[in-house]
Length: 275
Image 1 (tube, rainbow, N blue to C red):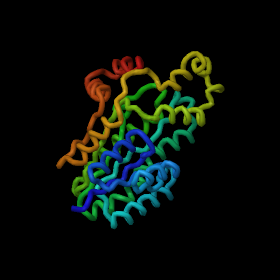
Image 2 (cartoon, helix red, strand yellow):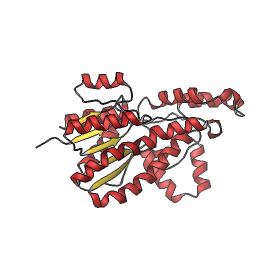
Image 3 (cartoon, rainbow, N blue to C red):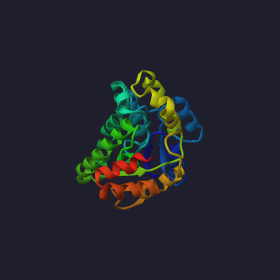
Image 4 (cartoon, one colour):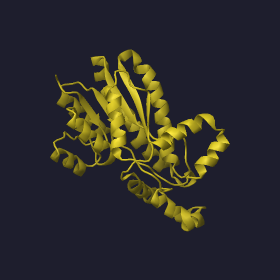
């Protein structure tokens, strides 16, 4: 039987890399794309096909799709949209251009890639599109506004796409992780330092007293789950005859989903403000 094929984005580390390795071990043909060419070369050294893909660069999206489809003979069983990053900080201090790049990387680029891949899935009458969302696609938290905005947008996008693709045999799935061990926070502070002029902010005293330290540490310290917890769910979503619309990974995600339904908005604000 011909191996199933999948394109996974964001395979430099963390969830993307763990999922790529697991699926390869299970016999899938995995295209493990990364944003940087150096990381792509590391994946090639492991035995992957690793086309470079930067969601902020439409040309790289088109090239990646072309490489993948050439490698599969024009078909693709699944795509797992995973590559994303956060721009932390108070919304009043986020420049519009920083917000635009966040949406390009975490949302618009994902749509662009889908536009290249959906026609081949539609032609085959089947396919699976998996989106790595977040607990922050369920609830918002202070100082994470740009990332929250992209994940809320993604949640609505996936809901609509799931309904629209039903008659084409294409399954659309949201993966909603909570706190996962990764380089996510380290990468986020780089974005903060690139975009946020905190010294000119009305919140400068707050930054100096506590906010800078909090942002650099990624907020409250608590239990983090390994990337394999997400991989386990991705495997379920890919192997289920009729996958769930949403898979909530980690206890915080499950708790927040319930809280979102049951608590009045002000009460939920109070809970979330505690970190």
